[in-house]
Length: 208
Image 1 (spheres, rainbow, N blue to C red):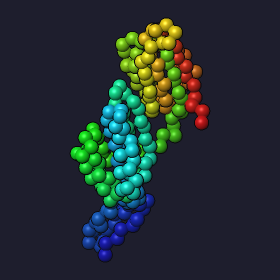
Image 2 (image 1 turned 60 degrees about the vertical axis):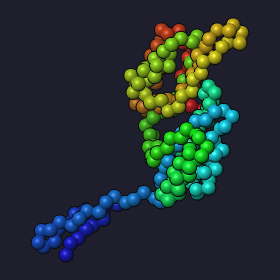
Image 3 (image 1 turned 90 degrees about the horizontal axis):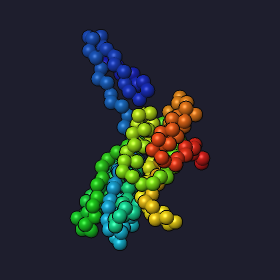
Image 4 (image 1 turned 45 degrees about the vertical axis):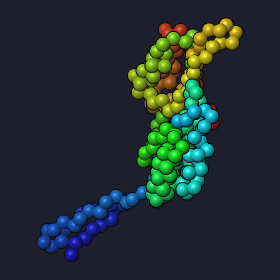
């Protein structure tokens, strides 16, 4: 008789008297509601896609896990992560396809998963203000990539100073710093880097 012993969600192999090996079962399936769909949508400012997408998510029985809305130029950008049972997500995909055809929205969506827990990362916020010039954001991103620091959120803008009319650059960046990093040394390196580019910057821990 073939035997299979369940260990930690999987079945270990065992042999019968004839030396035949029992088949190993696959890992357990995720819970029914652990299905995720990432949706991005773009439309003219006067026709924001937020209401239409949020309605389809609710109608299909899915939960809206995270959302971002931004006005970029003349358009509105909506980024949404939704979660639900497999059949509800499939229903939502069909509803979005109809919405794209009938309302002319620019949509992109695909299956994804939950964000991995990163308990070894310390959340810090970086704020930068400077006279605008090409390449500032690239140089900031390259600095963090070189130090193996992840950018979790970023918002930047170019604007004209009210007092002088000078073109300015501003960015607010949330980063994840590995817990074994020497924070004081990193801060010194970052501020020296910013001084070299004539950027006014701060780096502080995120306070919840």
